[in-house]
Every structure is written in C-alpha cells, then in structure tokens.
Length: 232
Image (cartoon, rainbow, N blue to C red):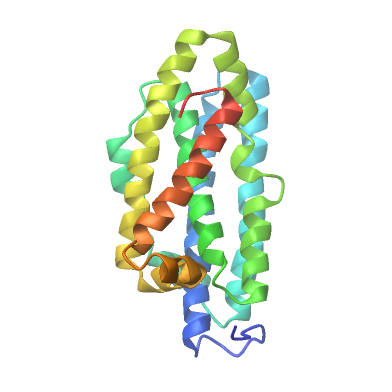
C-alpha cells in the first residue's frame, strides 16, 4: 500500500482517492449535524432534546479530525466536500417523514448506511487516513446514539414499532440508491471499494462491485434494526 502519510500534497492517485473519501465523510457529518439539530429542536421531551443536541455537537467535533487529515494531504476542506454538495437532496425529497419518529429513524438508518459505506471504502486507504475515518465513524458508536431513543419508544408502543419497521425498509432502499449514485459518479470511491473487494472479486468474477457493496450494507442494516427490536 502506498504511504501518503507525509503532507506532500494531493499529487498522487492514492492521496486524491483519500481526499475524495475524506470529503464524503466530512460532508456526511455536516449534513447529519443539520438533521440532528432539527430533530433535537422538535423532540417530544426535554431529555430527548438534550440527548440529540449533544449528538449533533459531537458530529462537528468528529469532523475536525477528518478535515485535519485533508489539510495534511494538502487538500482544501471546502473543495473536498463541494463535490458532494446536494448529494442527499433527492433522498430527502423522496423520504419526507410524516412524524417526528419517522424522522429519527430516517436519520438512524440513512446515517448508518452512509457510515457503513465509508468504513467499507476506508479499507482501501493508507493507514493514517483509514485510522482517521474509522476513528471518526466508530468512536462512541456515533450512528447508534439515537438507538436508545427509538428502541424505548418502539418497546412501549407496538403499533409505532410496526410502522417504523415498514418505514425502515423504505429508507434503506432509498439509501442504497444514494450509494449507487456515489459509486457511479465518483470513480475514486469505486476504486477504493474495489481494492477492498479484490480477493472476493477474483473468486466471483461475475459479481459486480455494487452488488457486493449492497450485500454488505444490507447485512449491517439488518443487524442495526435488530438492535432496535424492529424487523428489517
């Protein structure tokens, strides 16, 4: 694996690919901050409002380490994120929640799929960049922090649980569609995932990179919904 730990600037293909993924992670964290801040403002209880507000603040803290690595590689944080600006617009338009609970689950599922994809692609990065991405996305199990809020409500209200399970199925389908768009529009990310999948691809040459990614993300989604006590 190419060593791009030194701040030599984005002059190699490896560092350019790393900047692409770092930009996606940073942009996703920024988008998630805005969503969580909105959810917090409309939370049914003060305790939920406080918990979600803390989560939102932590997203920006996590983003700093990612943007720091962008600078180490000689990249510009705003430029790295700019190519993903508007990425979730169509997803948001197609998945407008009708209740606050649907909004919370949308964030839980959507952010979870995004995090899982970024973690998968991080396997193709240099050691330093991979550590930054993994640390940002897994420290404190960020994507799962709203799990307790959802699980408690679903346990107390079986009707709500059934509705949320159906909603979760719709959200994951739309989220996977976003991943497909990302792979098609950003060859650097496709290369990173293909690097991770190289051995399995050799064993199954007819399988596409996208189908492999979708199978991995779907499996993680199922485990995530299980933690809520909701059927995937």
